[in-house]
Picture 1 (cartoon, rainbow, N blue to C red):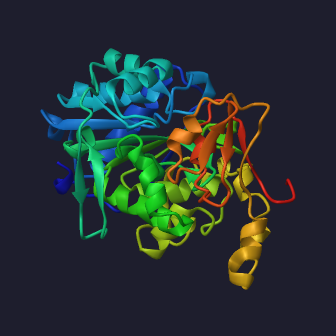
Picture 2: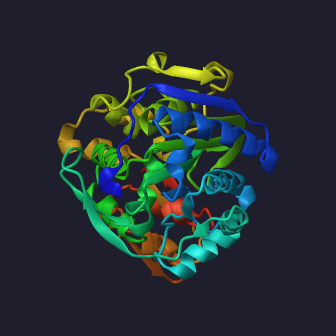
Length: 385
């Protein structure tokens, strides 16, 4: 149960090379990482007999496997197969964008190959779409609705994919737990925590409350630019893992070329003492980080970072005017309304078959860009740049 789980805080991060998604190759790497991470948590193989294990991949949206938006199904299958072989009851779960129900979840599972992966491994593809409020005053003053399979699990296996993110700079282990909040209620959190630092701290709270004891990041093929769904693919050929999601994310941000202060969740984690101040303080086991370190292309929303350094003169209006905001590319927009349905502040209307964003209401959460299936939303400032 969620109240009994705790993250084992450690500086140890495993780094493994992996060149492709062939199942046997993925299985070999994932099985090795799972054995090591479980032992770091003090979990022997016999521990898992009759335990409830929730495997939580990134299932952001109904996207084809080759788009690399979601966790590759080979990772999900391998993780499920490992724990099923130890006698655990394994459930694959997540809350994608949109309404949290069987129709949506099964459609995402079919398109991403995740449902088939779970079934091949002998695991259950979640059919319980209930949720309940959860809190932990040790970590957070807030309460969050958490989906039942994560709330009821004895062990949470967190399977993320490494991508840039328009709002959070990076999505990896910590951000992946945002999928514990049911469906459209995620939009409510953007309205509840509209500032970047507040939102990053909320994500840290949520990760601590969910307490994923096993964290693996698929970085075989990553996404850069306008992630988490509209960016370009970049092959890294690596897998990162550890018992501590905050240390794993520190390593991931480093290989993407971010400084320790650029990624909101890493910055928040450092300030709260949840991870080391420097990647140099991590215990890296396996491949060295420098083998994979490169400069990832940033999202459009983060381009021209000099704007953030402008003082808050004139009540911050100058800086606000120069910052990039979501803008609809009318030639690409088909008026499907997905952006409107995911906007937490009702800033989007569909007029004459095209989306229209009210910039006076927009809080720059980039949910519209994140969920647009046509990549019809970009970030631009008043000068059109």
